[in-house]
Image 1 (tube, protein in one colour):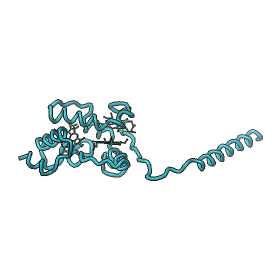
Image 2 (tube, protein in one colour):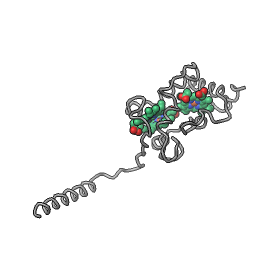
Image 3 (cartoon, rainbow, N blue to C red):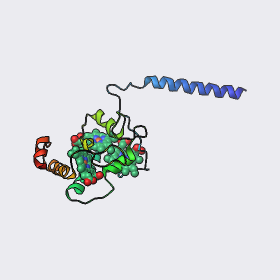
Image 4 (cartoon, rainbow, N blue to C red):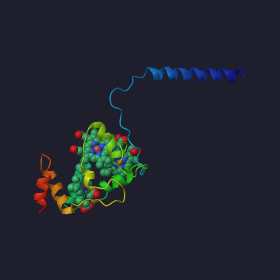
Length: 161
Ligand code: HEC
Ligand code: HEC
Ligand code: HEC
């Protein structure tokens, strides 16, 4: 019985300390940190996580140019594959709600991407679900790859004729 009491005292003290400790923690100021939804599939990403965190846009850009401009199609960095692993279990999408994978960090970092204007945000969707055909997008991607500034819709329309 004595031992149990002692144990109880230890537990209580630890809890009290933890409580005090949590009170001492500086409160996160400003915007809440983004919730990064866990990947639903796969043990790991196509590159180490910290590399992906920093450089995912480079892999996407490079893969896109290879696929769309050079016609070299591979699976590893395909946007479809990202979506297969990263779509949320709740929304089934990478960009339907504010906590979805491709949204949370971006809104936190104030990054805007137009990828989902054309690309499906859900696994198994078709890559292009929009009135533009692959040819138009090909030009857009090609122009975007060459241009320092964004390609306007008017330029796009001109190119597509
Ligand atoms: C085989 C499944 C799989 C594929 C395919 C995949 N990922 Fe990942 N990704 C993961 C896993 C697992 C992690 C580690 C973090 C986690 O468990 O959610 C991760 C981590 C990341 C991170 C860092 C997240 C963080 O916590 O900081 C980014 C960014 C990312 N992936 C983007 C992509 C992009 C872009 C693609 C497509 C080019 C892609 N991933 C393809 C499974 C995958
Ligand atoms: C104007 C519409 C449009 C926009 C905007 C767009 N894409 Fe694409 N993209 C396409 C089409 C169409 C293809 C060709 C699809 C195919 O043939 O598989 C393509 C192909 C790709 C591919 C190679 C195929 C694959 O599944 O991996 C990648 C990677 C890609 N796009 C990434 C992006 C990213 C990243 C963005 C945003 C920065 C983006 N795209 C914005 C229309 C678009
Ligand atoms: C761990 C946080 C995080 C996640 C998760 C994440 N991104 Fe990003 N992404 C960023 C940050 C931060 C930047 C801006 C980096 C910079 O400006 O150097 C960025 C930039 C980008 C860009 C380039 C935008 C531009 O205008 O140059 C693309 C494309 C992109 N992300 C696509 C994706 C896609 C697709 C997903 C989901 C598969 C995704 N990201 C998930 C943090 C994230």
